[in-house]
Image (cartoon, rainbow, N blue to C red; front, side):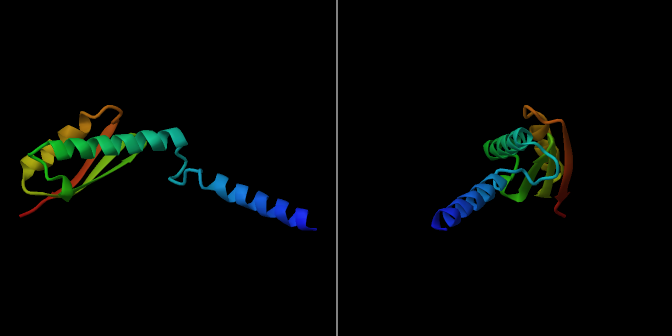
Length: 103
């Protein structure tokens, strides 16, 4: 009986561990999820390196190669610069620029 309980516990633990590896962002594959994470990281890093963009004020999300920018910019030039930087990152298919310009 003890062996059976141990086996059941090990099986349950294995199923829980395997389900933790599943991608839950829609039907995106694990590889696509990793690519999207790399794109997001690259865009954010380029924002930090660029003095014309306030990286702390702009949020970056990526899904299937589409980058969505949101947050606030000081002016239209900062908004346009952020979009240009995002478009220049390898792997980006399109950019949705939802950045609002502060009055």
